[in-house]
Length: 339
Image (tube, rainbow, N blue to C red; front, side):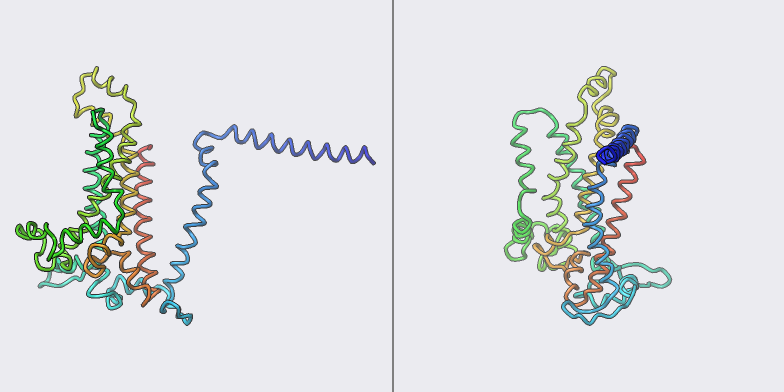
């Protein structure tokens, strides 16, 4: 009896050791890229589970109509999405805000008035993201190039650049609110004199408020771009510049052939982070002006959530879809270029 049990146990140990050897050999035969993805698989699974459920739940809520707290919901399918893109949902949005810009007809040529652009949540959000990220990248790149140099007082300059980014959002909003208030704002009289902002209702004028919110965002988050780009610059092997100097390359040629190509992956990640964050702009608008003056997609989600939960969920899902397209495009572009 004892001999048979020992035989069975040894057979089990043999099978276990054989499976372990097979798994070990399989891992050893994996390439570096495949092994890296294997190690990241648990993280991908966890993030997918955490991010996928709220997204699917939001899509489910967009299929119904009803008020928050009301359990009597009615299934309407894709009606909210159709209403958004046909203009039928504009009556449910606060003020004179629209989802798409109003198109008017002048003879046989359709065009969009400026008032239609600044009242469209989709247009305002995209314009804000494009303008703010462009200038933040441009200015942040310049700051990173300066901070990458070795000079006296570099630590103090870095601290000075980080200060705007460290200021809480509410305080930043109050600063710009007071600077551009029609009664107490000391910048209003100067900028209104040259026609940049409106003088009487600066913070309630859509164009003026949009400009102020965009400048406030650029002022605050340029430091974030500069720090990310600076990390990419400092990862470049300095010996490459010595080789370029020996080859007779000018400063511009060194930047074009060495600096920019090698910092491009970090630059792409920085632009991606800022674009995603800019597409979700809400707090800064609420601190400086109002959501009906500078209507963003996130503003409309919050403003309509209590009156029409299904419509708010539809706007949120459309926003997530736009962000998903942007993220996929950036990742694909970097993958295609081999970064």
